[in-house]
Image (tube, rainbow, N blue to C red; front, side, top):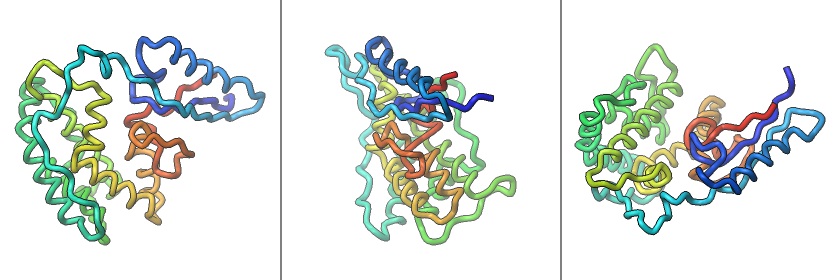
Length: 245
């Protein structure tokens, strides 16, 4: 087996070469990828540290403004000892979005939510519990507490994305708009950002890995690192790598 050569990119999942229909930028990405073949010895793991330009869908003159279907309350201030207030704000936000999630399930006839054994409120409480000094036990004997946390995070994020996709009207938010809304305008995003801090400051190597690779997407943070600082995402919001052989 030959040593791997790969280019890490900061683009959203499903767009390994960046903005669609932008041959100039995509060629730049391709050349950077081919550049990993030049060194005689490997492995070669390179970073592409340039964000993709906005797509016409995001910036076109005829693009109607997109917004969440309901006006959510702003996340509470992030101060020490406010974990209970943050949890209650998260539960209120879920209550506001529940009708839209249920409408989404009715319209589509399916949901991707359900990897966690907990319901959405249970997932919210479980995630929020990790912000305190006493971490909770796993809700299932079949998985560790960290795996349960990962599943709770996946379900909550999917629940929010499905809820906001059920908005009325003809305008559908682009993937970039929805990701920005989730991470920057919701209490759920604020809770997960605080969870990322907990993971990075933890002495538990599994929690460090969860925060470093599976929680905050590099697409959101805009930071390039070695993956150990909680800024690289190999699954959500980023394409983990484009491999060259």
